[in-house]
Amino acid sequence: MANKLFHKIRETPNDVTVLKVDYTGKAAMNINCQTIHSAFALKKNMKTQYQPLGENDLNTLLRAKLSNIQLLIINEISMVSKTVFSYISGRRNQIKYFKQNS
Image (cartoon, rainbow, N blue to C red):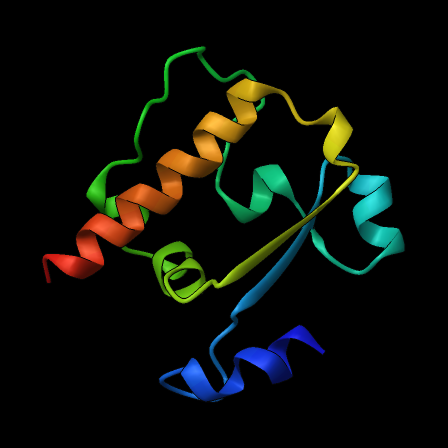
């Protein structure tokens, strides 16, 4: 449904504009999505301060997959810490900054 809403603003129809993620692997399997950690390439033991990915790591499918996201749906959001939110925001900013400067 949400992909249909965002269809007109996408550059190509196959771009993912809605990303659905879950905090735990079991729950992610139940709703057919990725975990937050796999979708945003987050390590299990993250530092409190955001540490950006290197350009080589970011210049993969991660950048291609996340560059056109318009809507992020997080299942079990109450389990997500502010550190994880910081990393999600940091990844999005890295991708957005790169896209604007390329």
